[in-house]
Length: 402
Image 1 (tube, rainbow, N blue to C red):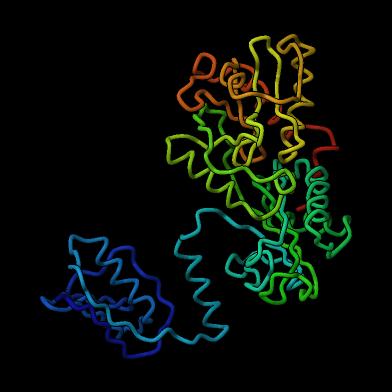
Image 2 (cartoon, one colour):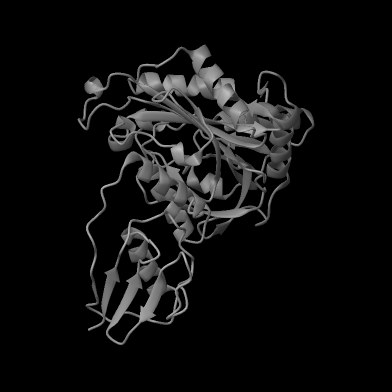
């Protein structure tokens, strides 16, 4: 039996762990040495390496080399350390520096500490927040383009409606929330990306009811996204995950487990996402985007919003599409029930949302859509919404002062 044992001799400074283990028998300071023996592998912590990092290092050594631990390998672990606040902060800094996060978080506002931070390690929320352990929270977003917030007013209206449906009292009035969000973007120095924000029942306890929460909470974060989405064609599948009931589907709550599973199911089947059908079998929506079609009679068709989330981007696309009717590219625009058969027989199909703008669908399940290539209407609508983000009217673009 191969035993992995750890030897530690001094308190830990927060050194970073190399992605690959040190050479056997070599102990470059300040990193620990990995000494391979026939019956044991010993990590020396003489350089001051913490036990929790040493355990991770052995796992790294075992998984990133040709060495394989046999079955029934015993790993001797020390007790879980009791950390001070300063040590927790130090480890959070190290976690962020490790590159474990794949997005750039530029600024966060929290009503809990009543301000904005640009330190990603400090971008945390209380674990007893009911949004965390009960899902009692709502959220929304707004794109940042060329130093302007796109459709912030429309998204604000929606989150306030969602909060009312979720019985979440507002921590501030609408104008104050709006000001906080704009100031958070300003502090971030981010001119292209996205703003995400949440209204929560707030922290207080781990009970089911929010009656023990002293105050509701507002959180916001700015994520930098230098690249724009590309209108490349994709495949979708009919999701087997049950759709949320209309009462919860029309509310943008943090309970996105069905949405996440629908997205994962689509990816597992070689697609971009899944498509939900409603309780009557009509086309509903994607995992977190609306669905649109161009019929053979050149009509832009979209499912009604009465059982699904009312997409701000989708509604803006419908408004911009009026130009295509005037130009003769479309014969009309309609919102009604759409059967699966009608959808799969369309000339074009597209997904519409703030994160993707307009994304053509070229295959649904085993059925190719139209020619099996990106269609001209989807491409034109993508260009229209992108231009609207860059130079649209003041009703959809709010300048940010940096």
